Length: 225
Image (cartoon, rainbow, N blue to C red; front, side, top):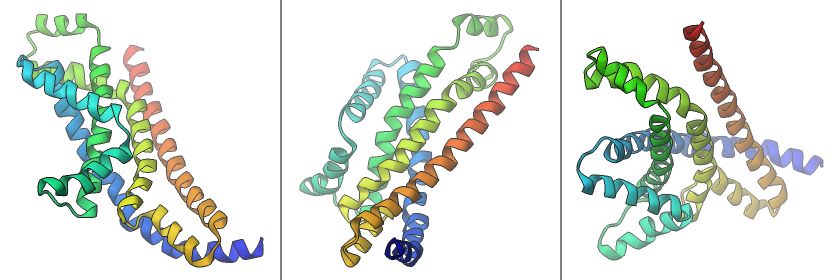
C-alpha cells in the first residue's frame, strides 16, 4: 500500500498537468461549441419553414446519436485524410466531441421548447409580443430551466468522453495515466488515481448542476407565490 501512495503522490503533478492543459480545456471548448450547434439544429428543426433544413437537422441528430463516439473520432481523424482532409489531434478531438454532444444538446433543447404549453405562445400574441419578445420573455426562460438537468448530464458525459481522445495520441488525463502505468508497471494504482480525478471533476459538476437547478426552481416558486 505504501508503494501505491508513493506512486500516487509522484505521478499526481503529471496527471494534473494533463487534466488542466488538455482534459478541462477540451471539455470547455467542446461544450460551448456543442451549445451553439444544438441551438442551430433546434432552430432548423422547430422554427424553419424550409424542409431541407429540417431534414438536415434530423439527419445530423440521427447519425451522431446513433453511432459510437469512438467510431466518430476514428472517422474524423483517420478517415478524412483519405478524402484529402488532414486534421491535427486537437482539432479532430474538438470537432468530434462538439458534434457528438451537440446532437444530444439539440434534442434537449427541442424537448424543452416542445414542453412549453402552446397557450403561452398564444397569450404572447394577444399581448402583441414580437417573435423576439416571445423568444426572450416566454420561451428561453422556461426552456433553460427545463433543459438544465439534461444539459448537466450532457456535460458530465462529455467529460468522461474526453478519455477517448487518448486513442488518437492526445495526451489527456487518461493517456497520461497510461504512460505512467507503462513506465511503472502499476496499472491498477494508476487507473485508480485517474478514475479518482475524473470522479472529482464529475462530482464538482454535479454540485454545480444541483445548485443551478435549485436557483431556477426558487425563481419559479417565487414567481408563482
